[in-house]
Amino acid sequence: MQASLAQTAIDEAARTVARDTLQRRAQLHNLRIVEKGGDGHCLQYSVQDQLRQQGIDRDGQTMQVLRPALASFIQDKAEYFQGILTDEESEPDAWRGLLDDIRHSDGDARRRGGDLEISALSCMFQCHIQYITSRQGDAYEGLIITQHNASLYGWWRRFKKKYDLPDDLYLIPLTLFYEEGRHWQSSEALIPQLSTSVAGRPQLPARVCGGSTRR
Image (cartoon, rainbow, N blue to C red; front, side):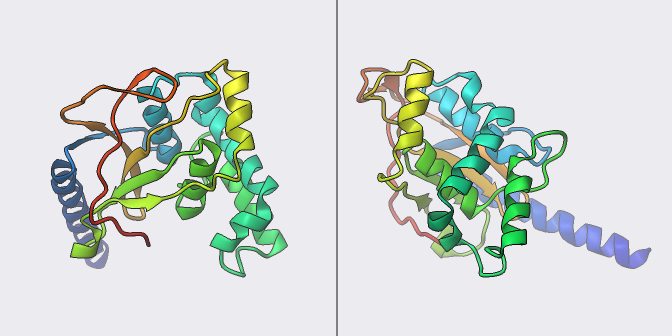
């Protein structure tokens, strides 16, 4: 019992440090943390919020639609995305289980999401995804940036056509917060400044990513 209580205290102290780190780094980058759902689907909810901020508020990016679409996209581009995984994760049984966990949207999530999902989402929506991590150390003060693969453009083109979006619509980077191993959150600029997108719609400007690193 005492050991359990001691471990709980250690975990709570670690979470306090992580949250304080995210709040400090949010201020550093002129951002506010936007809390999203905590049932394990937080990455999808956060991406949905980032898309909404750029004027894309369609059924096509809700968690219930986005998870199956994400799993199908990864499956279709298996040769590309398996390069992110370990050899064990790429084994047929493990690969099928991974896709099932990503696809699952009924109730609590089976998988919260990490580098694989971030990479796939950046390719799906053809924009960089950048995030601030709670990981400690000077090397992690900047934004961690995942760049999209421009050759995997087909899904984004079909998405725009399906939801009657301008052909020349391009997104600025999606900016998230990540409490390592636990929780994804969305962001908003503390001092929003409107600029014009390629499609002529008002949008927030891209953030400067000085000192960025990539794990």
